[in-house]
Image: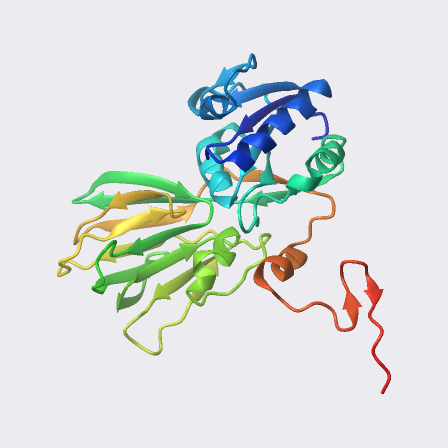
Length: 306
């Protein structure tokens, strides 16, 4: 996967810094001889452009690479809409964290040149499929790269639900909801809820209760092939929401059955060859550096002599 000729660009946030990076990227790619396509909303951000435009529902299969300009939210949205095409995605970070978009704006051209020359690594990530059934009929579906969250919406009242894994009853719970997260999403909402950090290569799913009304309820890590079922308590007065990646909502009602499992098709994320998950955690989460070592220069820091 080193011969990238046809490259699609995606950006959906109208901010000056994103538009500037997008135009720089277009100039770099076209002057380097690559065939560039713009997603429809991306073309609107660029303005006057003679480049071909595509819709995410009808992307040409001849595209070799999709580059997303924005933050992790932009990448999450792009993955959900484009995973069906089996085209690798690369992110230029113009957001705050950058767990998924790790090409730096100040080094965009130099890093992009190396990646397009074949100096990169590939990370396979799985998504979660979710469906809501009511009286035996499916009334809503969605997908998530990070997490599927059952929550009460704008209400501050707790809800009741039952959890089943692979058909086996796990527990009933009264809480603010449940986070069902992939390893990719373990550094997002699940982390803030007290869940563990999971390496992206793990084939596992973590379930993190949200403010459970019991001291013994803790996050559970299950196999990636697990079938997860949540039954919304019939006595609930609430109409809980099921949110995918914090971006799309599905409305549920008391008595509904929510089913979650791994999506059959995975997404391939492209990273610069120097990408390191643990270094990303150190940088983004404020972990400590090596003792006595300045990681910016890899030189040992001299200690003052008394």
